[in-house]
Amino acid sequence: MLKGKVAIVTGSTSGIGLGIASELARLRADIVLNGFGDAGEIEQIRGGITREYGVRVAYDGADMSKEEAVRGLIAATVEKYGRLDILVNNAGIQFTAPVEEFPAAKWNAILAINLSAAFHGIAAAVPQMRKQGWGRIVNIASAHGLVASTHKAAYVAAKHGLIGLTKVVGLETAGSGVTCNAVCPGWVRTPLVDKQIDDIAAQRGISQQDAAKELLAEKQPSLQFVSPAQLGGTVAFLCSGAADQITGTAISVDGGWTAQ
Ligand code: NAD
Image (cartoon, rainbow, N blue to C red; front, side, top):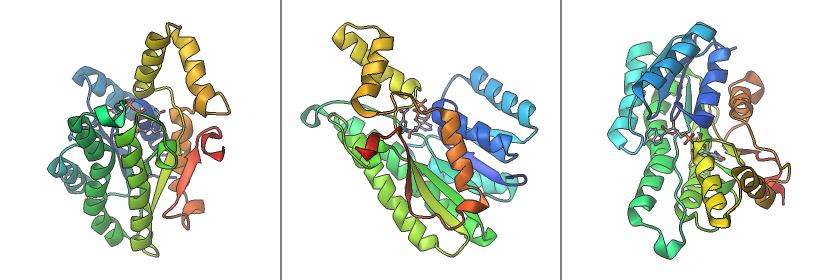
């Protein structure tokens, strides 16, 4: 379905981004991986996807907290492959604290990585996508892009902002063959959420398994985690012809979280 297309997935060395990159590769897109981690492990991931799906897989370690690095990632991809068809803005971090104790440095980092990186990436990618007459921009927001929780001032602000950005870019590119949408996952069991499960387990003196159950019970009526593979499938749908007229919107994949 995506043979000959080139996809960048930011933050794809782990968790949801890796699930999305794998699904796009399975559909035969060439992939640019991005994110931090151990060089050997990243090379194993890169080689594994290449061998499994027979597509070209590159790795670019651009730091999404830095404007020039984000814009450089887009430019280097266009330079290397001569095109850019799919941009998935997925890299993200979390930090939790009450607003009056929230460290300014954490606020700045979360806004930079979870929101501004998407702006810089989109701004750099749209001209190329317009030239091609086809492009897919998918911003990985969150249930926290639609509703709030305590102690997540920066994350909730960034994710709400990301959905606003999605709407503007959807409007500005309407009719050009380029679409821009957000995906809003509920809880997904990744390192980002494992840390929150660890915190609950420690605070309450309960097992990790019980802490995971509590985390789900508080927000996610299905009481089941969303999987990275399911989110890969959602992004693949947004890259399909069936989604040509879906733009500027936010799709929830949250086990019922935001229906309440
Ligand atoms: P994760 O921690 O498993 O992965 C985050 C990825 O981003 C990693 O590859 C990491 O190396 C990369 N990254 C972090 N800082 C970076 C930087 N400065 N530059 C480049 N890469 C950087 O987390 P995840 O749960 O897979 O989260 C992925 C996205 O999904 C995030 O935007 C997160 O907010 C969103 N999300 C996650 C959940 C969840 O329950 N896990 C729910 C809703 C939304």
